Length: 95
Image 1 (cartoon, one colour):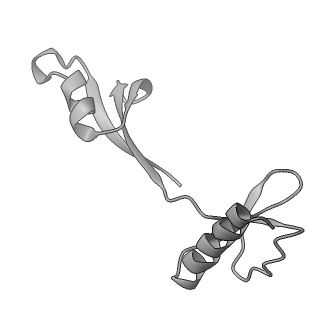
Image 2 (cartoon, rainbow, N blue to C red):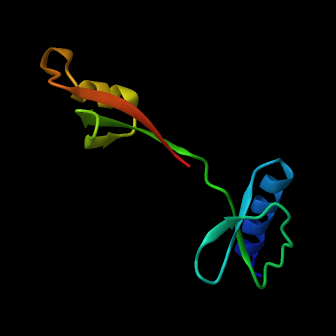
């Protein structure tokens, strides 16, 4: 391992030690939770499990998603109450 790879490995292992979840990548490219990593860095790849992503969507009639927004304020700015016509803002959390 070179210095950058070592630095990355230390960051992932410290995050695990601090209670964060880590994931192992299989040869298929799929990441899966690893509750007891073996830390064989020459054979396997780990990362700190990404946190959930929160976004807001504007929805028409409860089913037609128009736009995805990074903030609730941006979503609300797209839905004017006086021109609502069935539009609503919904919070979405992607794990």
